[in-house]
Image 1: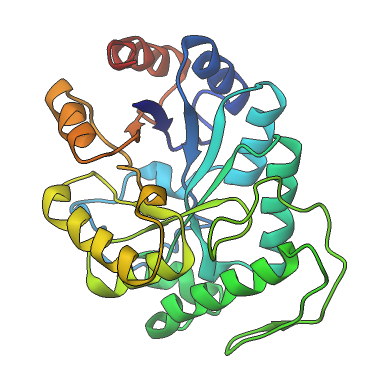
Image 2: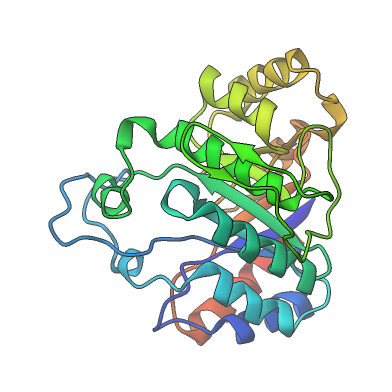
Length: 281
């Protein structure tokens, strides 16, 4: 099983360069970074985990800039977003960012996408909350038109692009209906999410990894009903607090990669966490 990590990198934590070097040297498989552009002070949306929102949410580094630094000082470390709030991005800009990072890293990018939980943050980006998932699907389709080998136009419900010259192209090649970097969709288990994953993605990024024994078979059913190759479905439990029995349980479900949560801390504390996680490599 590949053991990757995630962390809220901020202006007060270990740097992307230092962390990436340590991860590769120690044999970890990858680094995934979350995204929040800003956290409105007047937020009424409750924090999904309950209680007060941790301060790192409002201090998060831009994941593409940070992963670009990580790519520059490593050769094998996989790079991922966990997650990119796709509805909050201009899709033409995001397609360029993702393709550039995949190109410069030699095909190491996983584009983890999701639809968010913070209504006020999304509203400041002009996102209508009730349509954010449909908007995300539309933006991903537009991005894939730009990633196509030949100039390809796209005219969707929320946006369009003319047939264009758009380089660089992602290094990764199409997998069934999916083109561009490996794409995983985050979100709570449910038939609508699983149908979307089967149509648009390479797999699922379930936060915390709970309840997979019930949900993974349902996702596999939706995947196969969409005509996808069952061997290609990827389930990557994300932001997991590790335990040996938990990782063995994931392996029994066919999970090949898990993303462990690191503390949003200074270098010494993060390195201690890596020392502890080395037991699972």
